[in-house]
Image (cartoon, rainbow, N blue to C red; front, side, top):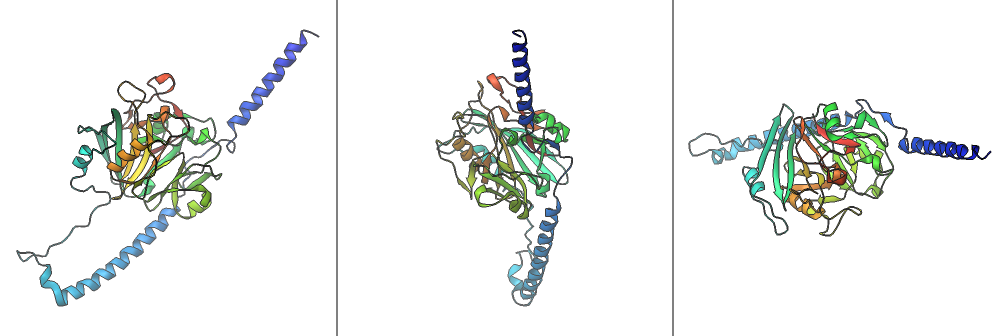
Length: 356
């Protein structure tokens, strides 16, 4: 009998551990593959509204032209007798001084080096990407400026194409699996059991958390939302294409929305960071700051917000940082991720934001 007691205890402990692991793995709706699920119908509504707006604009222009021809045509000639015509500005074109302005920005809170390194560019018929490396407060910061014809090209993906807890992979592997040109880590939804998860227009988790929610709408706008005021389904009905629950919001309505001493949980004041934002001219900003290395100290939330404001961001949001912070571009990781023990390697995460 004495010999059997340890065996019984071991068997019981093993059974408890097995049940725990099983439950822990499938806490989030029993992990399931997502395939190519995407709610792209919302873009039809956006296109219909744009067509209506264009039609109304054309009618207004015709009326104005008739008035001009009959009464004021002479006032619209240039000195050489030809008609002067303003070209229609393209979506997301920076103002003429955009690059030099970003390179020379210095605020009272930040030390931004004048030396800005061009990492690379990418463009196709739908998307243009410019990636630069800045040095901010002795920290390497990588900024991808993305101009897209439609928000539909701002995509997200889960590790192993599967939604569920404890389903993880590195940002670069998830990016390669989805033929991404550019990718950053997302909000690591799998580390929490609450907080809205809306990806590619589909609700995966509708339980609100305490965190601000970043909403990227099908019409190209971006907004930080209090989840206690609206449900996940209502967000999708209003045109939300992507929603992330990590936070906090960094910039709202063009103003910094974090304090100088604000932090995420028990995180250190200077950390590797990942953030997304949008500028008033329609560019999306993907930003990753290094940290915890000899070359890069890291940034506080306020420093990150201040830097993104200097880039022209009117809305910006903090995603999962620390060892998760990774930027992948043109087939390689371009920053220096730091996992446990400050070792230079990627941490496995639940999800990414990417352009393919």
